[in-house]
Image (cartoon, rainbow, N blue to C red; front, side, top):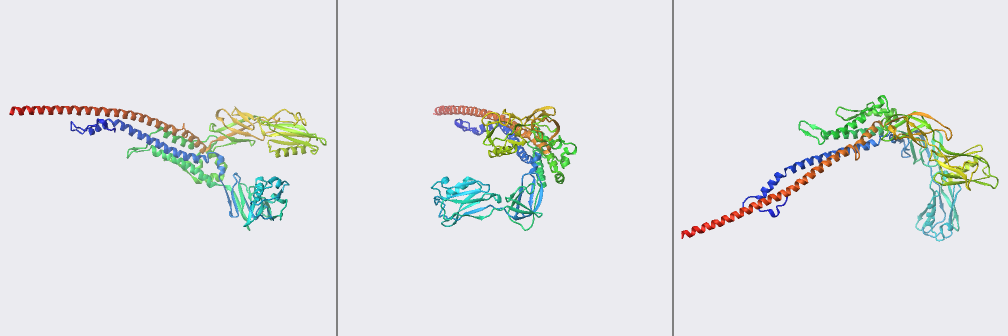
Length: 637
């Protein structure tokens, strides 16, 4: 309440407690404000209730995102080793399964060499002492005075070898105080990764003796000896990456299989999260007839619509699946009478055991085609589930060019220039040593590989030399010419361009890019399929196949969640509506408060006037009394 300020008079003339009277009057006039504040507080509770719902929806989104696509079930792989200390295993990230029993006879190790020369410190000057390292592949690398400089130290030599990144690591090993030796290790294990080290310049002891030999890992599998260059093996058991830690006297069993428990746990986690949303909204919307108490969201249409949408996404038959396959109840998922989602874990576990991939496709988004030459790629939220007829009217092709190879004369060179779409080019020089088109093709491939260019496929057939892009479509472009300009070996010097796949989806034109055909209108918007296995340029191919696309039960729920989430979702709109009402009430409260301040000032002025008037009347009364008393006294004399 406002301060009494200068209008505080305390009933001096009237003897009344005017401050208390004013306070009570103002409290009566403040009753509308209190009603507004109570209503505003109820709105705040409503907003907080929607906050609780939003928290539960976030948990549901997290659980849903783990399995809302069929391929996300691929992460549920279990790999085990019967002797994890000797052989450790992890999932290789593939969906393949496999099992193998083997004995570890030998671990792979890297070659090591040590210099006979000793140094007093890491900063001792090398003088003219240098080092030459030759790798198993034949490449030689020099680390001498010319490369390191006359002031180089042992540390400088170590750094130079390591910075060269040639597959050999150098270390200045302290043997004891005042004694250091140069040690060289191959960075990779295996017999294929050996090297030699030769001293250059003046060394007291320039020998680099082998202190550890390079060894391959050696396994015995059913009496067969298997070798690998590394102790980490990815190509032995499908679905498993194996790390060898110790040799073994007995066989170790390694198994990679589908993680049924993990998949079932993910499904039950999703259903638990959905029940969390449903139970929270049920609590907030309930009415107790005995206590006559209603939940904060009792009767809220948005809350009812949200629950209805979530339930419908699970109970309605899936488009793209027929019969029982389209019903969640066939997997043991159904709603009970109390509105909660019930899960038969045994039924789900059996479904995954019988057909893991098929069951995953019923839960998450997936697509399949009737033609093995076509592969479903993706769909968007705009894509309607269902079955689509896809017609291919033009196959994608690569950009290709052909020429007739003629062996250059002795002393003659012919240089082919391959210019890519971005303007970059690679020159390949052919001479008399390349006697045939096969030899020329091999040289072209080797030159491109050395230059880091992987965009081309080069082949030969008799005298015909063929160059083509690896990529398909109109974006794949290149030209062939002589480095000096003009034609070479009869190649067409104009730019060669591939073609994009063309066709329709459900009779509507689709967009082709390379081998990918994507729907751009109607229900097929965002639906993409890759048409592969088609012949190369110049060989037309037409075909028609069916593409089935379903969101799955969890995918459908994810779609329903989208209607609840975000700035335009059900929850956000409901909270925004509450915020607007709170602001309206606050505006009305602020207006009342301002009027009350003015009203208090008016009342206090009225009481001041009353007290002033009473004071004047009292003063007049006192004066009259004195006058009367004086008159009475005079008469008495």
